[in-house]
Length: 403
Length: 127
Image (cartoon, rainbow over all chains, first blue to last red; front, side, top):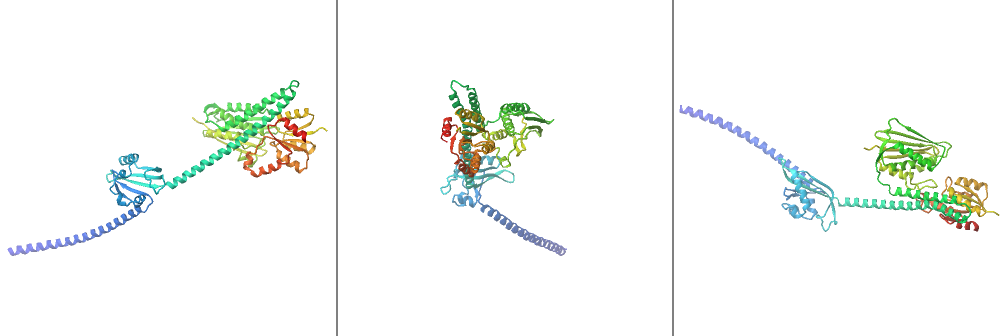
């Protein structure tokens, strides 16, 4: 019995040993597989690290990784090289001990606290100054929070990009632009002086001639004509001065809600008074949906109407002059079109008519349409011209309705 | 011999004043209010003196000077002008300025507005 029992036990042990051996082999195989897998993963990680390391080091952007107390954890070569230091010089040191600045410390703390990144373009830096670099440098820089798995902020990434050359180039460009504007202003002033001189000398020469005739007639012949002429020429000179002044300092519009058709009628009456021409017929075509009430500067817009209508009146030499005025409202914009059958404008001149001091008239400062353009622009509107020589001219004015 | 004078000037007030002054001095005065009218009158009549404004409509004073020199019209020309050298067109068309200066040399004298009428009368008398 004992023998049998022993035998049985032995067999059972043997079975268990075999089982264990099998399991052991299996485990070993598993272990090897895992080992291989780990080796593979390690290799992969190494490769990825290598890649990140390469990206980190091979960029012209300065990068520093700081902890939430702003101690350097890592910097890239570009960062270290900028101040001619080794990477190790920075690691472990505190950012604000190296570069003390209260303003930036505030910003850094803000980012670390709120987790909102901070990005600036072309900012002037003073404390990065280095004797070999230009006196003042400009930087695009950013501070991004780094979060751990639990989304808690455990560091910040500082990136800096030297854009001094770009900013300097921009500044030079701005200076050149300013100089151009300045020289344009000077040449405009020269033209202004010439226009004033020309337009005032004409009436003055007439006054001079009238004075000669008065002097001659002293005491005997009537001098009523001369006195009348002098008065008229003084008015002319005054008109010239007023036009030039209007151009030189057109003010911002003072908006008032008015009926534009009333304003237009006033303007027509005034122009008829200045140029009493009998043979001009004025027709108005008002569309049904036209809203004549609009917020504009009445003085300025009347000036526009005066100038446009004066041009039309002066250009009409035919036996039957016709001026058609169309008015409609489209998409919250008032559209006025003034069409005359006057002498029209040469194609070559058409692009110049809005330029100050351009004129083909024997008298006139060449400011009329320039003033119109300035005023309509100040109203955020639009004015355009279309003309055919000997057939007539069309002026289109668009004014937005405002609340 | 009564001197015949043509005034080409677009400012009618100026024309009237000059007309009155010169007629009273015994000159025979004709008037033209634009360049084209002036040109037509010059073609038909002979004048001793032409008083010419430069900036006149339709056919400017420079073209009158050019026309007269081409047609060999021998009248004396007194240019009256308020024009200075700087002018919008002079700036965009420098070449034309040279041309105009050359034409201006064909005038016998130039008076810059506002001139004294005695200056004009002196010029007329010396012609």
